Amino acid sequence: MSVGTPSRQAILSLYHNMLRTSQSFSSYNFREYFVRRTKDTFRAIQNESDPERVRSLYSDAVRESTVLRRSAIVNQLYGGWKLTIEVEDAQKQPDATLQRADS
Image 1 (cartoon, one colour):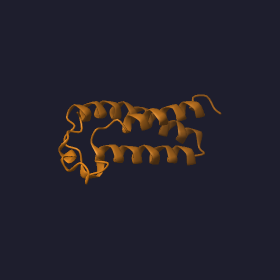
Image 2: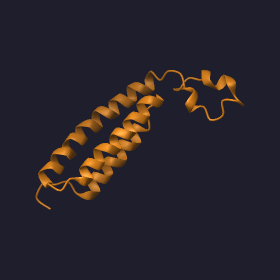
Image 3: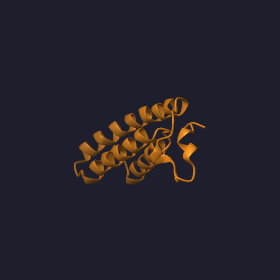
């Protein structure tokens, strides 16, 4: 490894932090989108062999992580209604679709 190349442990740590942050969105659509985007970003890093490109992708992911964290906090503040897909058993609890996602 050349100087400045992020270690495997640093990349995995960032990946887990971004996944955890992505899963903290209260909105189902945002949550699913950011989980998928995080996985795609780190697949690209995993498949890259050029150390300079890995460094660049890692630094982009670090910047994206800070934006993602702030976005998740704002989304939690203004959650909205749960979608039908989020309700585990809609037939047993027909009024459960009216629950707020942030409650």
